[in-house]
Amino acid sequence: MIYASSQSKAACDTAFYHDMKKIAEELADALDTAGLPLFEILFLSQAELYYQVVKAEGDEAYCRATTNNNAAECAPYNVNTDPYTNPGSEYIGNEFSDFGRGFATRCELWRFPDGNGGYYLLYRNCHIAH
Image: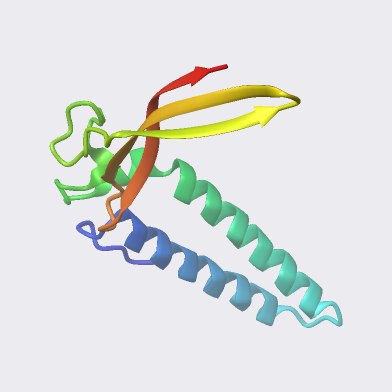
């Protein structure tokens, strides 16, 4: 398992996932048993579980190891002051009723980078009236 220290976290996570699957398949292939398909499913599910934990919780380890100074996962993040954050669009309204009671919501739609060239969208400063 070799991971370039300048890769994005998503690229490292993907390489890690493929390595975990390869190890799981090699472990299953090394067994000489009638239950081989069951063991392969077991090993692959364990690899998937471990990968999901690393993907979700591995930012700190990634940030300690990377040489990528622009990694979005490693920036001390504040959506209010980030230069790449869209500071909110016009209020987006929505009206709905619940058992005869009317509700209206108004929120700002914020956009900020996800580190992979795309954006996360976030409703903020929501106001609910009834």
